[in-house]
Image (cartoon, rainbow, N blue to C red; front, side, top):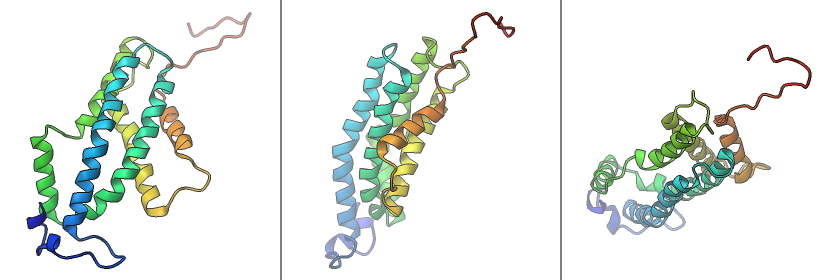
Length: 186
């Protein structure tokens, strides 16, 4: 990728206190991705061990926290790496060759939501793939905002993770019926 990312960028040293040369940025991003992606995918895959156990929202909370942390780490290296359309195209090709796609993150999460739905622990009207996308998008968006605007004062990753999971509204609402009053909706 380095040779095709523009005017021999890998051979140029970075400007002092400036951004790294494109080749160095790509190397940094790929090294970070190689380090973080397997762990992130393992966290998502491990959700299958939690089907039917604990509380669905409580099971998803560490996923949202880990997602925010993963995207915060990866965004900082990703943006400087993709300075050239050629680099982007080559990265896409490498992803395909490795058998990776956006569904690599979405599918394990969607499978977990679908399994919990089948067990009656997630609302019947929930779309598992869409919900998985929304959870990951919330994590991605927060990490993106933090990269550009800085950490939000008073808003921790924990608080944001709780908001993301809660607002998915996956779990059925428990209807409380007052003693002595007949529930006319049943």
